[in-house]
Every structure is written in C-alpha cells, then in structure tokens.
Length: 502
Image 1 (cartoon, one colour):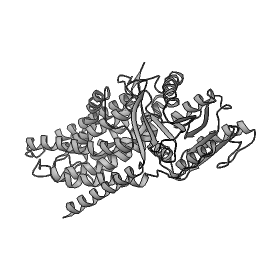
Image 2 (cartoon, helix red, strand yellow):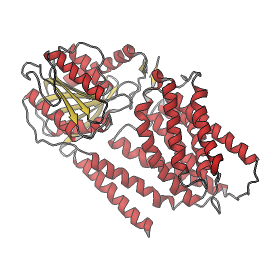
Image 3 (tube, rainbow, N blue to C red):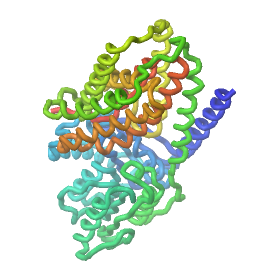
Image 4 (cartoon, one colour):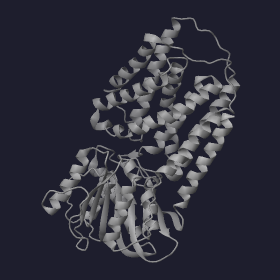
C-alpha cells in the first residue's frame, strides 16, 4: 500500500513540477542552433517586434541550461535572450585550453567564443541593434573584459564574479550581484570596483552614476543564496530585469521565472518514484549480504583509506584524462575503494565467513535495471531544466573512464556499510568528503575548484544514499546499489566537468 501511495505522490509531484516549469515558457519561441560551431539557444517572444538582445553566459563547469531562469525571465519581458555553451562545457565539442592554471589562455578561448556569439546576436532577426551581457562566475569576468573594449554593449550584469584585474572604466551600466551566503570578500571586491569608478566608498543596494551616460554602477545581494543558488534567487532575476529595463527605458510584464520550488518538487517526485520501482527488482540473495563490520575494525576501515588516499596521491601526477579535475577524482575514488577492499579482505581472512547463495542471473538483471533507473531518473530532468547532463561525443568514453574508479569506491563502501553500525553509510560518506578536503589542502593550487563542488557531491550522496537503501532492502545484495551508484556518479562527473585540451 505504501508503494502505491508513494507512486501517486511522486507522479503528482513530477507532473506539477514539469507543468509549472513549462508554463513559464508560455508565449516564447526557443530556437536551438549554432553560432560558428558554438551551441546557442535563442529565447524570444512569439510577438515579433524589435528588441534589445541580451547574451547570457554560464560559469565554470556550467552549461546554458543553468542560465534558463534569466533567459526565460528576460524573454517573457520582451527581450531576445541568447544563451550558449563555452568551449569544453555542455555540448560544445571544442575543448577548453589552459584549464584552471593558465588564466590568460583560458580567457582568450572564452573571449573568442563570446565574440562569435556576439556577432551572431547582432545579426539575429528582430534585434533592434542594442546589446547587453549577463554572466555568472567565470563568465562574469570574461563578459566584463569584453564589455570594457566594446562600447556598443549598453549594460553588463555580473553574477557572482571573481574579479580579476582589468580596465572597468569603460564598462557601461554595470550591475554586480552576489548571493548573501557567499564569502564577504567577494562582495567587498565588487564594492571596491564601484568605489574606484565613483571615487568614494559605496554601499550595497545603492545605484551610483547615470544610466543615460552609461556610468551606472550597483552591487546587490540575493537573500539566502550561495554561489549556485544565486542563479535561482528571485532577487537576482528581479535586479537583472530592472537594471536592463532602466538601461533601455523599457518595461515588460514583470514576470520572474522563480523556478526553485518547481524544480525541487520535480526532483522530489523523481527520487520518491525510485522506491516503488525498486520493488520490481528480483531478490538476489535469500538473506542480507554484507560485511557486518563493527567496533574498532569498522573505524579502522573508515579512517585508514580517508587519511592514506590523499597522502599517497599527493606526490603523484594525475593529468591523464581530458577532463579537468576528473582525472584526480577517478584516482581518489579508485584508491580509496582499493584500500577499503584490501582492509576488508585482510579482516575476512582472519574470520570464517558463512557462505550465502546468490542468484547471479537475478544479480545481473537487478544491476542493469537499477543502473538505468537511478542514472536516467536524475539525468533526464537535470538536462531539461538544470544543466547539460546527457553525454555526447568525447564525453561518452569519459563516463567509462570515470566508472573504472567509482566502481571500486561504491562497491567497497556498500559492502562495508551493510549490516554494520546504524549510521555506517553516513559515516563513510563524511569520511570521503573529509578525505577530499585534505587532498585539496595538500594541493590547493590545482584542486581548489573541488571545494565548490563538495556541496554538490554531498547532495548526490544523500540522494543516491536513499537509492542505495531501497535497492538493498529489495535485493539484499550490496553490489546492486554499488554498481548502479558508481555508474551514476561516473556519468555525473563526466558530463559536468570541462573537457580540456592543450
């Protein structure tokens, strides 16, 4: 009965979430095309009349889907919004040169892609010839640099920029937005940038200069938002819309695509639906299979890999995959899993294990079915409404390369935590994250970006932890969830991290 109730609730949540997300696009035309090889999407009203064009750029490890709230908001208010994928990101087949360490080479590549999109935007039918820019994080810095040398850009909205030294005096009508939960140092950099322009200290939420002269400056905060949440915050969307309206002396319907609630409802429904679907899997073992480790030996198996993995990897080179930071992650997952496996093997040799009969045909069926469900259940809604999440081209073999590392960790971890202490699954995931933080501290220059994605990894651990629990309850074998979650994580890493070149 509970599975039937959950199925109804899940399908209702998914239906309402999708309906609301699609309803936000009412009256819009969305055209997916290319600008000299750069994937772009044009959002515009079906009521065709000349309008300013706003080019919208995503941040590092992002994609054009991530910027949908801004694109839909602006298009619903009469602007032509154009989003795109930078080299190495999303579905752009061109690798990103320079990676994290060569800032100038990376910036040159990003600027070249932006210039192609700007040429495309200026020639788009329906444009009234006026242009503006809006970008997040890494892109905000690139857009400000571009705007500084192109006076035809009437306004620039920089969301959570990491401001590098560049000439900003000629950037027209600059709005800087930070999430209120982001480090205070970032907003201080924004305030200093504005202060340098006007020659005196500045305050948050105050507009300085004049729109007509292109000298308007403002630093605003989005309440309750961090570096990613700022993209969905109503404050960010409203500030951006009002800034552009004042620049171009326009006014629209005031629509704001505040989609956070509907995205949460959609994803909640997807997660809940996995539970009743897991009940359709065959039983693999007649009784629960797992390590059953308790007491001090459990803590040895938890702490030893967490400490040894970053220390052993610290002096080793790890640039062997064209996936930025993915090569280090695959090594961390793999070595962590191997050390856990060796520890369990050593302990098992010291005790007599009771054999358990396993239906291997059922194991194969359960692994394949579970892998399809837990991977696509997240990938499909993510790709449609949040971020590029379907692997294409060179990312497909990268999924399998990452899987070679993640399978060691997840299979070993599933075996360790089953029939163990009550909070074993939570303990091992926290230990892994602490191990990753230790690795970052040992090599901050090359691995610092991993700090930004640790919250995302934690969220994935929570979601896939629920999947793991339900899969184990049904099949009673840890390898089902271990292999399914390993593939899902490999998929997520391979489609998210930038593809890099020389």
